Length: 230
Length: 91
Image 1 (cartoon, each protein chain N blue to C red):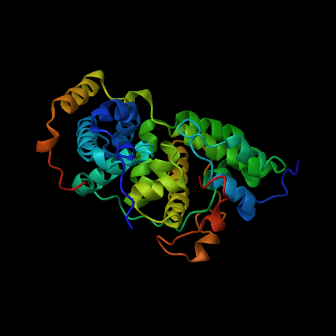
Image 2 (tube, rainbow over the protein chains, first blue to last red):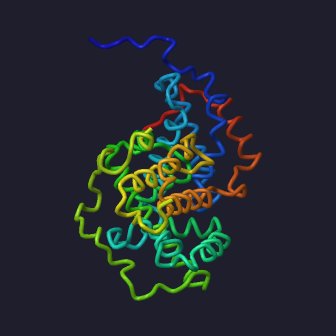
Image 3 (cartoon, rainbow over the protein chains, first blue to last red):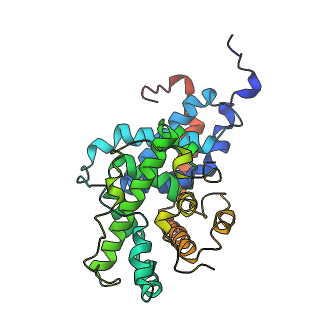
């Protein structure tokens, strides 16, 4: 038997503006990361607000409005903008070590130079650098990393936003983060902020042989603890 | 402290904590709690701190804020729009 929706559980469209406007800055910042263009970001955010307003009576009051709005934003971006943009070149997300930056900058083998190189690299990383590095990621990984590491969404929220299982979110994050770190390290290396890698095993990793495919699911028990899966 | 003896990649506890480290500027996750789980292992703690530092660095700058004009335009649009005539086909 279906549970009737009571008036108290349904959001009131009359309050949408007051409820949603506090999330404007976060939505716009993410839209800027996605579109790299202020005019397109404004269009995307405006579309998000109009869609949200139109559908607000379907939103369950008291649940996660921020995640709901980001779901609209993400879907709108995928539907309207992604096809217009150049596709990022294909990257092999398996071919990167875990903890890439740590290994290159702060790992045991580079402990003697790690901290200064780390500081120098981070001092030089700009918004544009981050955006460039994100753009190198395939879309599904890029969106997951943005939602988690920039917007701070929990795995469960990202799963709801992207409409994929939590394990898929964790898998995309794990691989996306590794590749992002490699991109940032390369940025620093090309500019001389960090040392050239020696002819060790960076980029040819043992875990690459783990074999779980391009978008295989992880389980919370496999890769994170309860504190992380919130 | 167990400096130098641990390989973070081989430490499940560290990897769990590091994967769980989110942007402290944007989330309410208790990073101190996660960090506390690594307090006995220097390399793992360094790796964790580096991950957090990267996420803070990734936070958008103030230059990516919407303009006041745009905020005003959205507010005015929402006030003026007739919901009954607003058709959304790809929500």
